[in-house]
Image 1 (cartoon, rainbow over the protein chains, first blue to last red):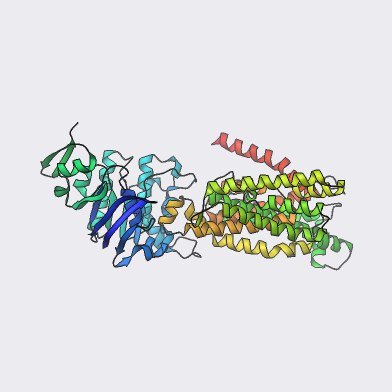
Image 2 (cartoon, each protein chain N blue to C red):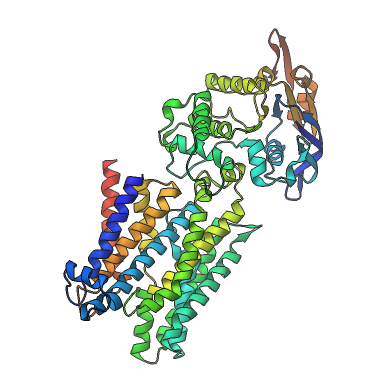
Amino acid sequence: MIALHDVTIGIGERTLVREIAGEVRAGEFVAVLGPNGVGKTTLLRALCGLRAPLAGEIRLDGMNVARMSALERARRIAFVASDDAMTDALSVREVIAIGRFPHHSWWEWSPRADDVRAIDEALALVRLESFADRPFATLSSGERQRAWIAMGLAQGTPVLLLDEPTSHLDVRVAHRILALLRDLARAGRTILCVLHDLNEAAAYADRLMLLGCERMLAFDEPARVLDPATLESAYGIAVERLDTARGPRVFPVL
Amino acid sequence: MPLRLAVLAFAALLACGASLLVGGSWIAPHDVLAALAHPHSGATATIVWQLRLPRVAIAACVGAALALAGALLQGLLRNPLVDPYLTGVSAGCAAAIALAILAGIAAPLLPALGFAVGLAAAIAVALLARRGSGIDANRLILAGVSLSALFSAIVAFAIARANSPDAAQQILAWLAGSIAGRTWSDLRFAAPYLGAGALLAIACIPALNALRAGDLRARTVGLDVDRAQWMILAAATLLTAASVTLAGVVGFIGLIVPHLARRTVGSDARALLPASALIGAGLCAVADAIARSVVAPSELPIGVLLAFIGVPAFLYLYLHQEQRA
């Protein structure tokens, strides 16, 4: 379980969101929403210990994340950053194998049987088995995104944080990835995922965390968070809500 | 991969063995083997043990050290244009030796002095490149280039102020890179630093592999990137400083050998580092053999020779492979 105790996040001296409080239970899929620049990525980085919160405390299963060593954190929390350029000529399998780093001592240079198994499973989960030996640089941006997700999966952690994992993906692959994340949550992993598409988030996540200017506006079930007034205060745009058999859907009023 | 490394090891050994045969005069392979087996058996044994073997060993160590340092720094900065002299070691070393020659300091003291100032220059560059508890790649390149330019100006000043052609010649010999006149005692001085640098490089292998995914992703998989950066920089600096002390400024190896190694065994540091060291050792041994035999009894500077032969050969290979690709 991840517990946020009045966590304030920011970059340098600049505060982005103040006093975030709440808990994310094991096996829960939480989508983090909010306008650009509001602090969603910074929150994920704070959760995995890459950036210390300005105030407050983040606890994972009772342990303060800031006090864990980098390796301890990496064995518990995987962070899939949004896609970026990669200059090295690695194969897809080599990229995913980097996710096994925290499970090795510095003198263990060769992959063990459990590494090979974890990498193969991750490749299968994102449907990249046939791409395993292809140079990473030759992948499309959507395929690269899936490979980064596979690297996070190969890390084999109980908590998986993802920063915009559906960016660059076509609608079919995006939904496959979100369904995969939901299934991983059902199987017991804790998933926190930054998304921009409110309807995608509502369709797959158990709860939504909506960040606004300097504060958390809501952290609740999709039906409660996708409230036109709340969304308007977050995004500054009028929103219309349609309740369907599959849950609420929202549309901007243009 | 192990097969390719074995082939490279055999080729490096062959290059070192062949370079024992050539020099001022040709020594047949069986005579070299006899001399190696019986170190006190006569004039040939003395030539092999006291003149050729130390030179071949020094050439191989310099080649291996510079190629390793190049591979380490290119991996750290993920920049294929980086060479080991970026750290300011060679420029600092050359400036100190140039000033020492100008001041008339005894020749046996020069390597130790050059080593100390080279390390100090590298530490200054590293401190200038510091950001937080780690190293900023752009700052490292800027600081290395700036300080190297300053030290080059000091060398130019020393050459201009040299009061004898001999002193200017001595300074230029350091800058051109040469193993002429080096003995076992020079290698004994540099060996601990070469050994420490190589051990540190081996310890950096997992970090180098994690860094291939970029700093951010390396951090997310639990690598202490700041500590890894300092370790890699320290290893490269020790290796470069020790090789500059042994052979002056030998270009080409540190920049281009890691490229050749990457094309041969890929970018996995487990294979890349040994492959770089083996190719560097073999190339440097062959280059030194050519340098001391083509215009015997005089010598060509090994750095100049490597640049003359190596750069066009590398460009041909590179362009040829690009066309085929």
